[in-house]
Length: 199
Image: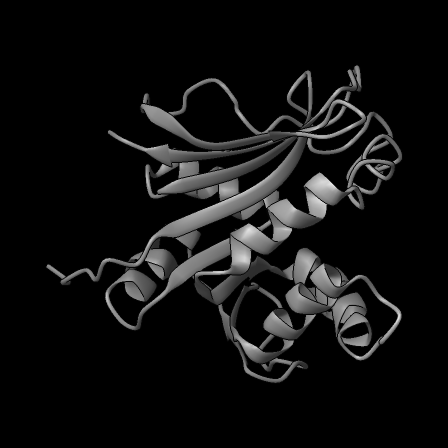
């Protein structure tokens, strides 16, 4: 059996009131999310989630989007300092991208792994230090919820009912208990919450 460090596996995602992480138009439908992701509450929430993380675990699609966008923010002196902070962290930190098609990483400080998310996280927990952050990669988060491997959830809950789209929490997940360790409400009714797993 592999020894484990005290690394926490953390995940961040924005959800509508009806539990969707995208809209009825499909995986690219984020229209309902746009007004809320640049609020002070959302930006402070983002700063909290990466503050103790030293590894970013990403799905391939999310990696393409994130690593195509955030590096330019790191160099943008006019960007919000909280956005620049996350961008610089993402550029500089260790990145592990799950992919069945890529063989070489097109990004610096990145390794490609073709393996189940649960296996990769188990390996990462056995070495290194600092938290392992899965930011908005819903398929990875779902796999780790199903495997019971998430220690902390950062949720940004939006005061919107999407009426369609993909759900994060599906039937069949193992039961678990969580404690609310942080909560903040934004001016538009968005809720930033941090939940730590207790059992």
